[in-house]
Image 1 (cartoon, helix red, strand yellow):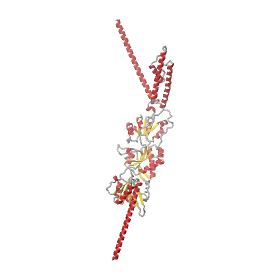
Image 2: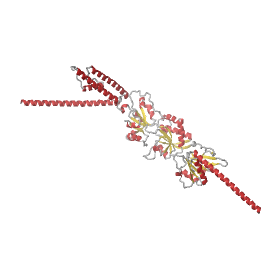
Image 3: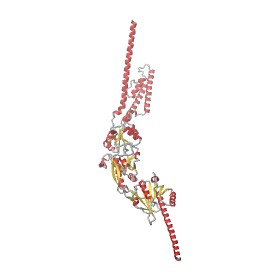
Image 4: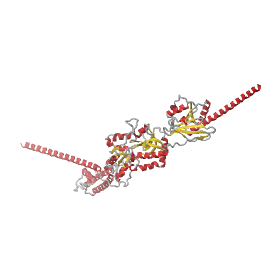
Length: 627
């Protein structure tokens, strides 16, 4: 019995020792697991440039303090929360610009419900980097109900039994209704840098609803180069998006519309391509849109493509149509100098004549006063014969100098006038200049004013809306034909270049000019607001630009601006408009001379009447004296 009692006592002590060893081993394993988890968290935040994180865990307080200390040592901010149902996820995980790391311990009781709440509130987004810590590989059935968009960042980290490494796998859905994609495992040791996940550039031939604009023509000849002047912008963007679809391995399900998209009755809803993206009927746009503030709440832009080639096109008006060319040959200082010189020479002419008459009083030369001298000077200036030619040598010298001055002045003036008659005006260079000009404006009938730019709004209100609709918004063929008639500007697209190349004469091409109405010069791909495909489309668009494919497709599909070959050497005949100011001066002269003639006739009649009355009164006085 005593021996049995001793054996039991020894066995009890052995059990206690075994328990102590097991407890020590478990504590050591737990500490090692916590250290690995902390190292994974800090490395995950540093790799994704997330300076702050939200951790949902049910660790012990000592482990949480250890995590805070490790994050603080590396300058990382951490918030610790228990994954219960009372958490306001949207407020807690709110971020607009900076990346935010979200760490979830899936061993906690409420972790599954937390992930479902995050999925329903669309918190698996571009700026939130999720790290799911698990002691073992998670079954796909747990994460399959969650919608993890293509641009989300969800990484599962777990330990493989018997291997002292952490396994990392990314999870995402290529599209709605597609099965969960799990990347190949990546193995990591705490001593090494966290390995980056594989790129998600293979969409697995999914079908993405894509909108494109068919403003003119039919789809049958959409990709026919013979009709490249029709819907040129849409064709270029469709071809570029086809390249992107090939690189990302997806197919486009086309949705056709006839307009790019403008507000409906001033509301926040759009029609056309923007409306289809806004309502979610389409995911991406295979057409280019201008950057406009009004569209930002409805869609996202996904990479700049080509320059917008729309502009107000017109023929530079002749100089006579925008100014009086008879005032342009000389500056004001030249006119003043010439007038003063003629006035001085006139005064010298009068002075020499009077001195000569004073020295030779017996001379038979007619006494010329100021009035006659001024009339002689005006006759010389106008290249007419003087009424009183001087007899003395000194006056003749002054007379000759005045004639020579007038000859040089008139010759220079006439030569400059001839040059100005063949010159086009460069006075219209901005939209403001176009508004102030006499040009009538119209626009291609697919544009609608939805901008808040005051200058553009003024163009619509003052130049377009004041006309009948069919005159203000017309087809490209009609608008380009009206440009040839002069004093007309038409806002068209690059397809108008074909009309100019085919029908305009070379001297008209030399006068051709453009003024852009919109300050935004680049077009861009578009996508549904918050679409997960935007980052990849931006990357591929940038790549297309860098390798020259965008430039190549632009040269292939767009007609280029016609070049002036003769540099305006063709002769342009002078019309009545150029001669109009001279006719006005002649009309004023005729009216003035007729008025003076009438006054002279009236003055003469009145003088005759007064003379007749005086003679009658004299006869009456004599008769009375005779009586």
